[in-house]
Image 1 (cartoon, rainbow over the protein chains, first blue to last red):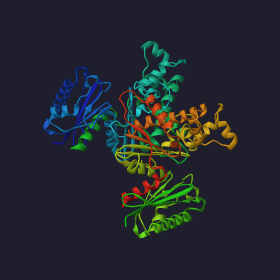
Image 2: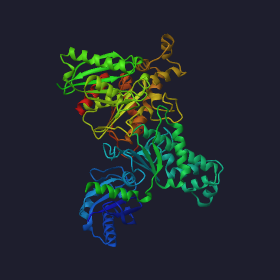
Image 3: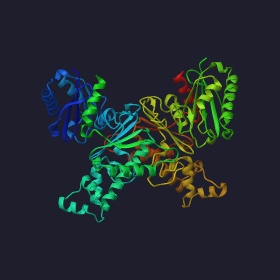
Image 4: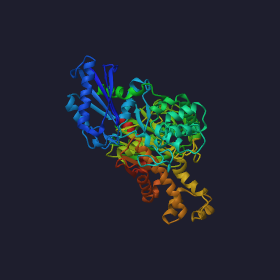
Length: 315
Length: 315
């Protein structure tokens, strides 16, 4: 009794975790999404995987109190409907919450994937002890979540906190979303790497590009640590865009803590310090600001933890 | 019985209104702040003015249920303390709420002036019928307010929604706050006028500058209506900065309605249409957005109405 299941449904993988009533991880797994098979097959696989995972832990579906499901937006979360997720093209207008509830016979809470990870960090990770937090995942794209007064900010149509698409450089780089100058077009892991590829400057990264045919954000910060000039310039650009984002968030929802997560944070303090430097350089002088800028602590489990914690809230 | 008093304390004038329990205006007045006399004298004047206003309406202080006070930030609103308001220099570390409560013997609610006007528009003006709204006042500076899920967003230190200081052009024009590229540095009434003065282009506005020694935002939109090229260019710059702000707010708190107030909206549809055009040009194509961008409807009374409506909430 009192098991909470957290599901993080991505375009590539589905992560699933079983948690006790204190949201302590009992067991977890990851399976390929195979999104091209469509929602019915994927729901089937989710249910099978949960069943198997529960059995391995000595439980059955009867022990489950509620299920949390995180999924990329935009979607009509309150209605439980995926509208047109970029990474799940066959899921157009899919009533995924109802389908999963019918399949499992358990209540399902449905939320944006970044919001779910944000909630995980808020209740059990880097956000502990504050009531107002902003959260960013720096991955292929940039996702976001906002906690205001201890609650996830939902927005009028459940799509608040699409923070990767805040414009930091008007008329700047084209973003996948159609806008120009989004922070995602500069500071996501993939765009940080892309900016390095596009740059003309001499750099030890050029050898990587020649040998592997590509540069990743990991290459950028590894060469940064070795003192490469271009890697420093690219990282500075990423840090500055993120610092402007921090300034703008402070003047909007006024968080006490701003938390960065995702692949990019493997760059470590060298990136975090640059973000803080640019923030201090850009922020107003009207009053002293004490917002903390830090990295997430839950790693890749934030999504399943947050989904399970949200499930606990509804049960 | 059941009178609510709304006070809008500005650097130049204090506006005071008496409202019935439906927040219908009974009577109002405006007196000079004379902020240089310090908080004690100003509180005295506020109390006297309220007393006089009540008598004129056939009431006395006994009939007052509660009082709302709006005041420029940053301040520690929950604690009731003005820290260091730019326009009220002698009010440093003034426990203004307590002072007013002691003087009047009535409960006082204390809020940011833009938040108070935002609340007024939300409950009785342009925000009626929605639960998520963003509000901007375009005056000497740009103030802001955010309603999320039917509540004023407060922030971790009561200074959320300082929306005039959102950076729209990094490394851009210097703002009074010390930052660079704030939307206020482009799109406030005073900076719209300033940009026209600084511009080199030939324009019918040059004659105004020569004759009056200055250009106001009113001059800009009057010459805009007469077809002046520079006035159009300056207005376009204002509209574009505000449109970027609208895009960024949509991706942050996802309002259903964005409301502009303040002196600048006298420019009329010619400005509003340009903001909407730029918004449609800048916004993403991931999904159709239905946010409404409109002007406030309560005019200069929004502050006293909102303050009285907030007072009603606490009583």
